[in-house]
Length: 211
Image 1 (cartoon, rainbow, N blue to C red):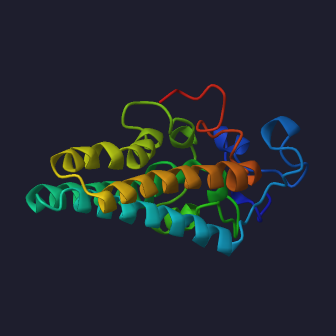
Image 2: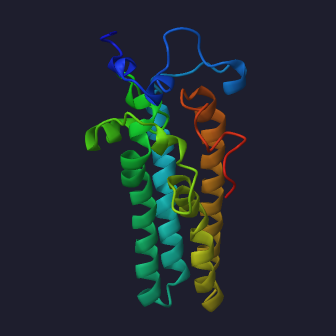
């Protein structure tokens, strides 16, 4: 047994999730010239999470502003959205998806979002990567919940804008949509090409279940 990588001693599919010390990902599994990172720089992790939280809180503010004339509707809807968005990413994902991820088996590893570190505090690693591979399967899977967290702010704010249009609210809703697009680009261009788990991630594989 290699004491540096205790997960390699396990039998079963986990063996396929632990990166070897040999060659990096094959050319088909990563962008040309993009080295795989076992430990993402802290500034990248903080930047991605900062952008994520800014978008979530901005979306909550946009909903509250859109229903400024109807706070009895705006506050419950806005706060419910904020709780849903944050919990699905920072609680549900670390508990359900992260335990089967490659980064949970790497000593001192740090994934693009740093959620493997949070998952390590919340639960033990999983010997079965099913939760990670099936994160894109099913109506209430984590991938779909994540997509809804980015898509919901606009349809939630539109009725409020229709009842009482406000340029500040409309501009904030547009800014939130732009932030969501910016985050998607940041993840795809700066995180995914270097991720050790990209070959198993349904969010970026051709056979991924469509939204």
